[in-house]
Amino acid sequence: MKKTFKLSHPTIKYPRLIEATKNEVKKYLKRERNKKLPEYADFWGFDCRFGQTEALAEEIHVAQINEKISFAESQEWTEFYLEILAAPAQRTKRDATDEQDEDLENLETDEEL
Image (cartoon, rainbow, N blue to C red; front, top):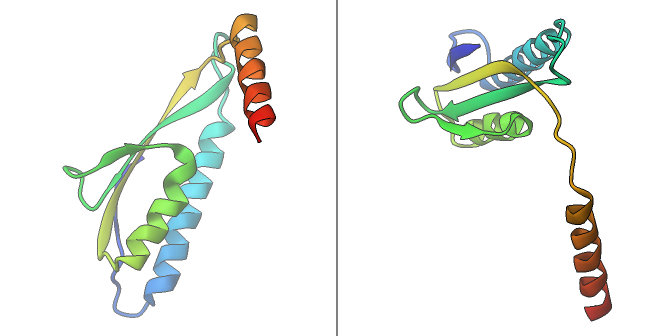
């Protein structure tokens, strides 16, 4: 999905347009996640960009989409650009040594408290 959402309408109020865009994004993500995965993939990853225009769009995490739309609402933007591209991805295993190092770091910080 590469789309510029217009947030002005002669009869529809601004908060209703915001909710409609959030709902459209949620439905799109659900539709993409339900598609069949290739054999080598474990989940659908999403590459997202958000900005006032396509040229100003910056990369964001998929979990930040609603937060960014709310930010656009607080700034009273008349439009914003949102790009969401689904890509099959595969989870990587964490090394046992990395997990042990994290456990040690957590213990050290707990002891300091």
